[in-house]
Image 1: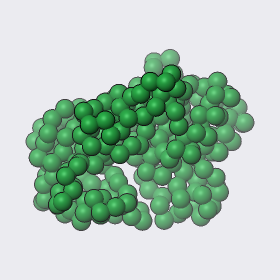
Image 2 (image 1 turned 120 degrees about the vertical axis):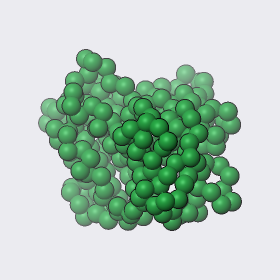
Image 3 (image 1 turned 60 degrees about the vertical axis):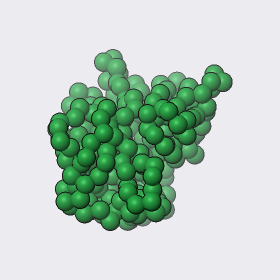
Image 4 (image 1 turned 135 degrees about the horizontal axis):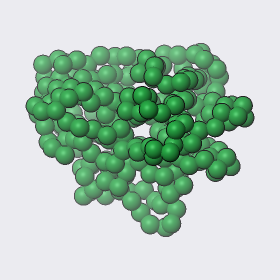
Length: 251
């Protein structure tokens, strides 16, 4: 983990209100699938914002984000040639065991972004099935990043692209057809994760989830991102996660 002065090389809108930001670090950085970066958006916003690393290609890093507030709105206005302060890599990412050959990726909304790094890391050695849920056709993005998966099911809440389903319902359709993964990796909004947890418990399939939480420091010191564990204890999403066994966290 280091604090870098990164040079922005591109920042473009890839879907409605969703941006792909590419920057270059002073040195190559090894990033595990599911790890994240804390980026300073500048101005009056003192706290950095956490963003999943979609791609890490030596010094070149790609993150994607949705404009949701003043901080991300300001980040969307950053242009090539500008510099950003970036702390990375942070957190514990996804790890797929050697015996887990068939892997399902379940993502909703901006939860697709951590899954891009998973697809890139494991597509060559695992049989990946991706279930990607979006709000509508205007929000669909990143599908080409899953080209290495055996199957990709992209759905939307309103049916304007693909089937009118959510990502969990897409997985359930395949489970009913006898397509059963050895493990499920997921990221998305809490209602989706709650539904997924129920589905996996009934099916007896292990799963891991990357939690989306507001963060202050990104290194476990400020305790802004504490989550509740099912054993009654607490964990810091930034330091102990963001990836947890889905059965270990309260959703």
